Image 1 (cartoon, rainbow, N blue to C red):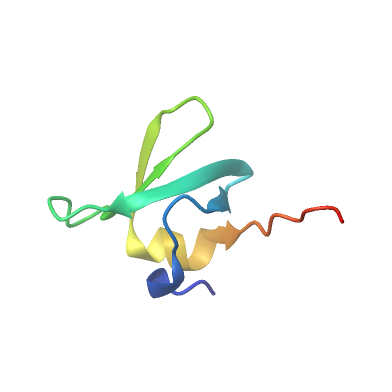
Image 2 (cartoon, one colour):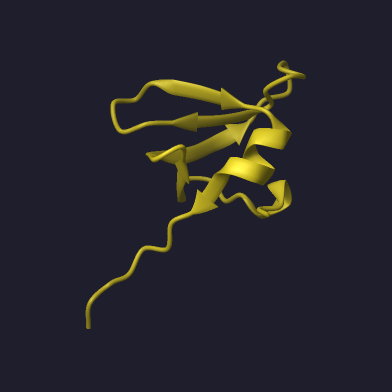
Length: 64
């Protein structure tokens, strides 16, 4: 389970098979306070429950 406090701005995450980049936490949305952007720049707002159960961090590897 991913803790919502560990989300890092501009890091890549996966949600339902889609790669999303974490943008920020919204103060105006109570039901969906976590804002992500997909590769096309479309905004997705997710609830805390969705983030904890369905969002996985993608670790980016770099070659030596």
